[in-house]
Length: 72
Image (tube, rainbow, N blue to C red; front, side):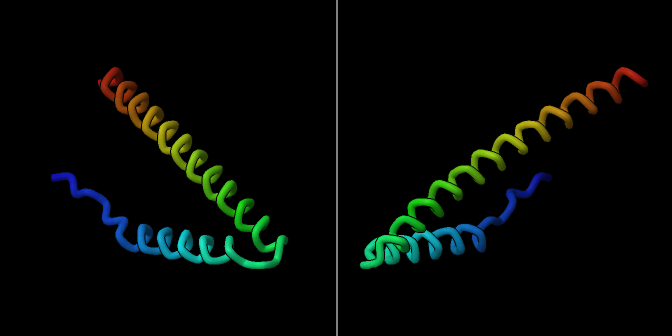
């Protein structure tokens, strides 16, 4: 009944961005190379935040389901 979410588009976007960052990491300008590092760190931060929010959502869903069963 449950269908796995299709993340193909997001995976392609992420791989494209990582490839572009790899190319920019070879750039001769120091500011560009530093920006690449900053971008990668920010992407990692956002992934961690997303994971944290997903875990909080799952916990809230579990709690609400548990509470709705109690009320019956």
